[in-house]
Length: 445
Image 1 (cartoon, helix red, strand yellow):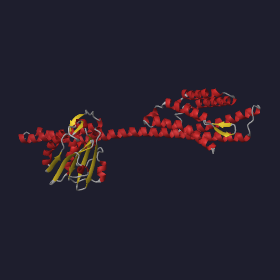
Image 2 (cartoon, rainbow, N blue to C red):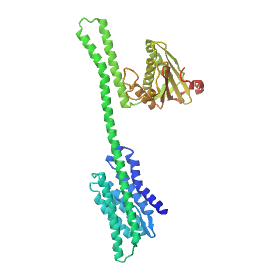
Image 3 (spheres, rainbow, N blue to C red):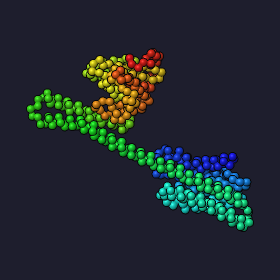
Image 4 (cartoon, rainbow, N blue to C red):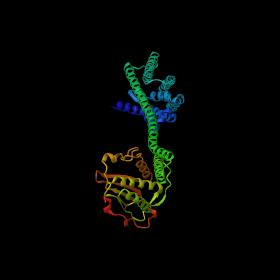
């Protein structure tokens, strides 16, 4: 039972450098596989080598065995001669404190292992996976032959005698060492291959995003530009066009140019992570200004626009960006309601350390699948548009430390709930004045 425990412990020592390298290097950035970190490799293999020597396996009485040859081999073939020599010198330094004839033999062994490992490193990275496994197998056979040859010579010279059963046990141990080495090489190559694949996948994904973005920009901007070109041609070719018609044409041209500018702005906001200049904002005034601004748009759509906004609401953020957030959500609500009997309301709730802004409509509503996709780039429920408005909106709110949630039922309406942190230091009125326990549980009002 103790033998099995010792073997498991030695295997753990071997796996330590492999998983350490993956944890501290490959998992951070898949591109790291292209530039190996020799410092981590050296530290891991030296530690693994020392642990294997300090806690060896006693296979039979008086005969000890360890897997130190594996980290030694790994350090040479994956990090070069310098890493291998440092691992070897560390082993020498540790063994010198208890120098005796057995340790002398062991030093000769690991020196022979190092010479063979150094010869194996030539073109190691260029070798195929099967060739690396074959090299690992040859390394194990080399250790086996060298061990049997050594014990045969010392027995012939009558230095000391090793029973046949001990040689058989030693041979089995070396075969196990070879098997564990092959598993270690397999794990290393598997992790490297995965890192390479992830690196290529990231590159392919970036190229795909760029291609999709370019195609989408071209498609979205081409439409308004085509309209602009058509009306400019009409203005230039029609000599009998009256002033009223020219003005109508120019208004349409300006409208389409504004739409193209809006599309480009959405894309830039999505791609750039614009700098946010944060300052104290009187959110009450901002929301009231926006509701007054959008009331005319709501009247144009025959929508009743209502709002209940508390006083003395302050947040810390970028006022321009937050205006963009609430304009996007309010416009979506106005456009979602029916042509007659449409109602959009804006209500604020002060709850503990957060300001909750509820924008509710009685429009067509959304399904759960549609709600789950809100905020995805290029996803829109409108016939026209880029689908980037809510993507930008989600990003801005997140950068302000807030969140957006949607509750909706088909043919009943939608409620957008925007939560932002309260700027408490500038409150002149107690929060309890604005906290309404009834309102916190209501979805629609």
